[in-house]
Image 1 (spheres, rainbow, N blue to C red):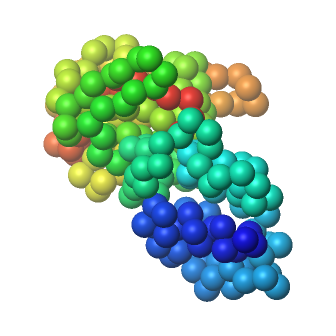
Image 2: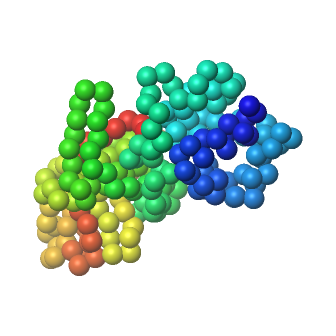
Image 3: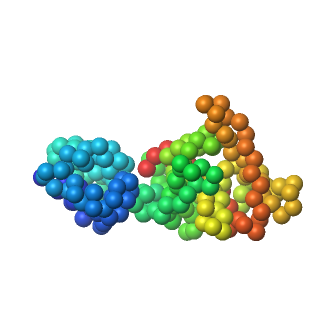
Length: 219
């Protein structure tokens, strides 16, 4: 089975449209579709690491070389994606960082190795963009599981969203000295030197403040 056929098989197995996969890879659908043939499939090689991140249950040897089974050893044959997969998410701009994005998707429960973290049914998975939260232990690409039903704690990270549906991850500082405002803290990255940055947002503009309950390093 050739590479383009293996990618088509992944899409079929997980019921993911080629359009959605193209968008997740940063490609226009006509461009991506043009690669899905014997003549042009060599253009897909540069995207294989990203495809493996999107489908972590797929075997690297199978995707790259057509060897072994499609799913990695020890992986169940289920055709569902992880809750935090960006293929299940809707993209939103990260407030204050034009070069960053974050993804959100509903989650009910996360299990990693022998650790199980239970969240409310309204919980969301957020992919952090940029390094404004690096001193707080949240780096670009980390998956933050946030619970809107939990009460935010001062000096702890939260995911907040305004009424324009713009979201960001910052440290929650509670009520600001400014009237009817909430304070947040992040850091400016100046060539590896991080300096605190404080933001006050009017409460009337805040739609959601969800504490970060669990941080996962990757999908």
